[in-house]
Image 1 (cartoon, helix red, strand yellow):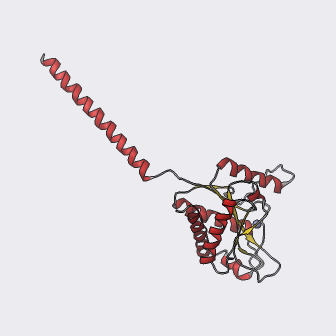
Image 2 (image 1 turned 135 degrees about the vertical axis):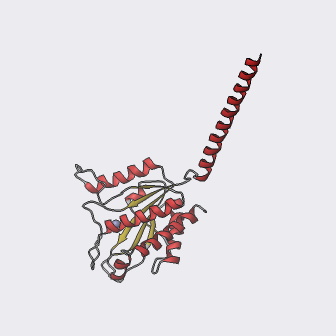
Image 3 (image 1 turned 60 degrees about the horizontal axis):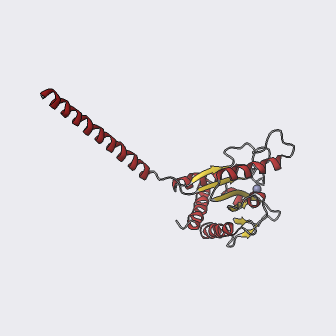
Length: 229
Ligand SMILES: [Zn+2]
């Protein structure tokens, strides 16, 4: 009888230990899940041009649009991730998105951007570019959205307003623009022309890290307003 009593007590201790361990593991995973919530929204950030297509070129410093687009995209990605957005970049480096074997590189590149947008199923798409114009006095950031894309229009107006409030010379009204990257998706997409490389002052500003940071913060603010966050 004594043997069975001891065995019963041992079994009880083992059972209590198992229950305790299970509870602790449960608490650990619950805390872990609530401290790092799953991103609610996905943003595709698209750095325009790349590879042998450098885009616009700064007249004074020779800086390429493709480099600045990438720098802005990486900065905006970092800021968006701080706000727990899931970010997908179309271009992560200076290489072009076109296939090396494609005869029409521009078409191949745009198809790749569209492919990335479709496979990411994003909530918003932000395409980044730098402008250029024969009249060197032209300057200021301009946001575009595709005609008929209502959510793109709301996002565009929100980002344009934030830029207008924070960045000198930024335009006050978002415009309709005819761009492949906007026309290829039904998602809320905008294209931001961050400034003019044909304007000497903006060419210098666009290369400054603190200006890039301030600019990307304004874009982020516009995105947060769009999501009512
Ligand atoms: Zn461009």
